[in-house]
Length: 44
Image (tube, rainbow, N blue to C red; front, top):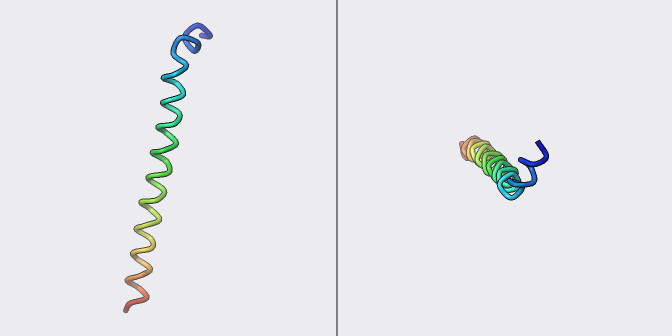
């Protein structure tokens, strides 16, 4: 197990960073949808 981690450490770090960016991106998309909904509600 440690041999696998030591040989592929770069790919594991890149995967963790990618998961983080996907999480941030999805959070921002949900926030944008909620803000758009609130803006429409206040305009009416």
